[in-house]
Length: 361
Image 1 (cartoon, rainbow, N blue to C red):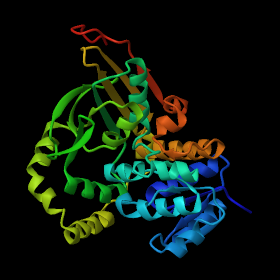
Image 2 (image 1 turned 90 degrees about the horizontal axis):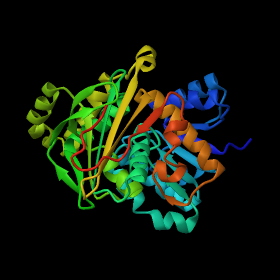
Image 3 (image 1 turned 90 degrees about the vertical axis):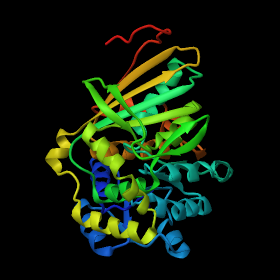
């Protein structure tokens, strides 16, 4: 029996949640990854088929993608896993989705837009909490106030710590430092570069700039040339991050970085079921026009991991129904209302305010 899509990284923390969500919605993806044991156990529990193969070898990867229309990549760090899978997808005309949050991965995928269009392939990176909520809010703000000069986005997450895979990716992020977009170009800045008080829907929070995926994706969704993304963080954590800049720079050394990632991967387990159920995401955004007009919006979501499971399965379903050719962001592929269509998600965008007009709550 042919299955239209394959989930690679299925036995990882996020992959298991995606597989369980897919089955709950009547989907039957082929589960895939490197190791037979955990794949077989998960597939037997969920009643699904499985394939074990590495992604480095061309022949193994081509066999692994045989007879599927799409792959959802949930194995990170995506800086290592994405490129060979994208290459194979273009070669075999298989649609590609992932749940990355890494700016360099987004940029590498968007650089292959023309090739993807030529081959009729859809490449959609970031179909999880990176970056569906912020991307949809950014596109919605741009619809209300088009031609903006600056976009600020922020998020706050409650619901446990990172998974092992996310923690490893965070180590790579620390090594790279911060990033913003200025004048249409991505600019590297120091870790914890700027802070701000962000008026989320539930309450205001202290926040710090981070190299979130929207520095790449929101530019393609909106064309806004200046973008900063903030994450809620108490002042004490911001001070710690700034003090850690010399250590973070040392992580650029590959052997040291991989050693730290190995330790982190063994010591982090991710939030348990109760923490995931309690988790919530708060999103805020603002677009400012060069003439001083501005518009703000907010969104509320489940916690990051449950959201990623629901969002990624929905994006696969929509892609298989009507795949747009090329390298696209979630909002440009599925519409800015994608977020509002997902369960327990809500988005509100205010009216445009004139220069000097105070913000109303």
